[in-house]
Image (cartoon, rainbow, N blue to C red; front, top):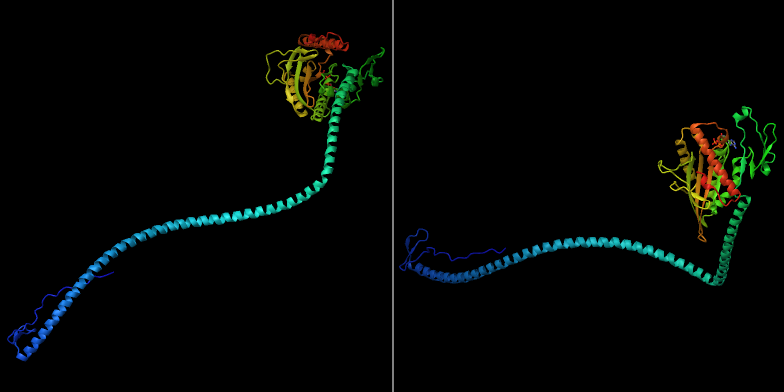
Length: 478
Ligand SMILES: Nc1ncnc2c1ncn2[C@@H]1O[C@H](COP(=O)(O)OP(=O)(O)OP(=O)(O)O)[C@@H](O)[C@H]1O
């Protein structure tokens, strides 16, 4: 800070004025006192001296006053300059503050950037070290590969020999494959020729053992199995001569389900080869048709074993043939066909239509696609349940209805593209006993007549087929 100093001219004080006549004004009492002449002279001298001094002082004072004035204006201009500088300083301070803020922000940013940089640096350092170790490993691998390549280069002549050998093997394999397929085709043909030679129609006879009830009631077996191995059975009927019947094969009561199935088994191969096959059980009520075809859970019959074999062979052939298998189950009762797989009863009457020579189908019947034996068994259970629902007494009903299981096989040979369609019918016919013996009336009579008609028509068809007749009377059945 610069302070201002004000210097002014002092007002004229009443100084003692001395008269010319030797008197003067006393300063203390301001009275005019008489002054003697030497004093007067000395006083005048002093006065003159003082006056000179006063003049000098006054001029000095004026000079000082001018100097002061100049100094003052200097001070003022200095103050103004100072104010300006202050302002400037203030602005600079504000600017500095702003700069500081900007600096702080930039410092923060810089710190963050620097932190990120540090982090990135660490990451990159880790990545680089990782890459370095990978490069090292790769270099080692490359060195090993170089060695191997080096070895391989030596082995190239051997390799060429091996390639030649492999080519020869592949050619041999192709040749063997071709031969295999030729042999397979021959086998298929021969297999089916064998089946035909055995007879397109084969009749097997199975005699069940006497049941406990029959034994305890005193019944005795009247069948003579002496010629069973040659397909002969004799019926001993009281005193009359033994009647002998010839079959393709006879199963005695000792023969179990597996033995019975053994003869049906080759027919499964025929079905998968594209041939139609029908296996049916015919006989009086209670003779064991259902036991032979269906069997029990512990003692499976022809149906289950056939299907099991069918899927087994299909699986074995899966590399060369794809099979598409579906199943239909129907019941024929009183000349009416009932679809046992239909979920809702249909008002439409199902009919058998001839699709080609010896080939028939039932339009509208459910064909359930099956992938394995378990699925087939589920389908069969559905059919069986449906049969039970259709009757109050399923056993009583079943012996008077024909139950037909149809397995449709569509095959595609993956090697030559050949496609075949074939059907396997497994039929449990109605009991034939009532044909001759029943004296039933009403509904039972109608049932008996229908069974009679259908079994007789079946007999006609079979004998026409057996005699290779030009006309097969399929249309009389149903
Ligand atoms: N080979 C056999 N060994 C043991 N038991 C058998 C044999 N065959 C049939 N049975 C038994 O005899 C009884 C009658 O058999 P099944 O019901 O199969 O006769 P069916 O001919 O089908 O009769 P239906 O014509 O009434 O349907 C059943 O209890 C069955 O278990």
